[in-house]
Length: 171
Image 1 (tube, rainbow, N blue to C red):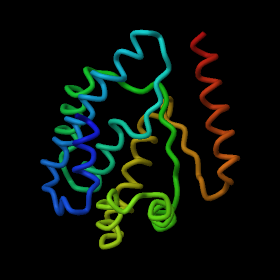
Image 2: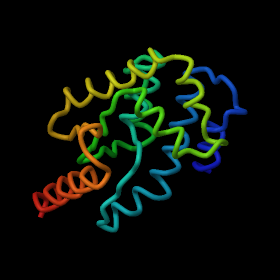
Image 3: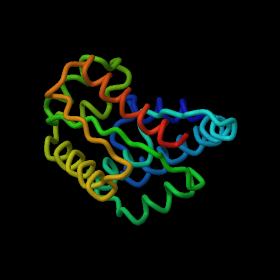
Image 4: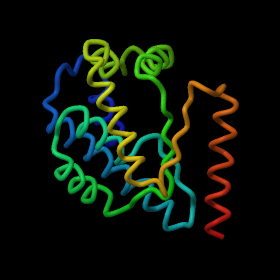
């Protein structure tokens, strides 16, 4: 179900979605993912890696779209049953560079956000600033990697080493 909701959100044919309605859809998808994948894996003692999680909702729907952060924190908590990442790796990049990279790696049927971002560069800067604010507020959880300074291989090694250090620290 979570993937079907995601398909609706990413498809350009979905058109403009009200920011709060969009938030509810993301939270519904997240809820399904937590129930079906994340919690069972955590209960088995596995390490779980997600491409995006609750911080993305805070950055995009909160800082970008203006949905109150208090709403988003509450909805995130309900959807995740309080599950929070031990580590968040933030790939920092100038918004225009990130958008260009996204267009080169994303299928046409999943470009709704990228097409919207082309029309509103201010939105992308608000999202980036939101992520950086979240990292500033939780420095023990965030590792910010400026991807403009490193090759893909170097970024991979930075992330690998960061994850290994965290896992070794947990025993």
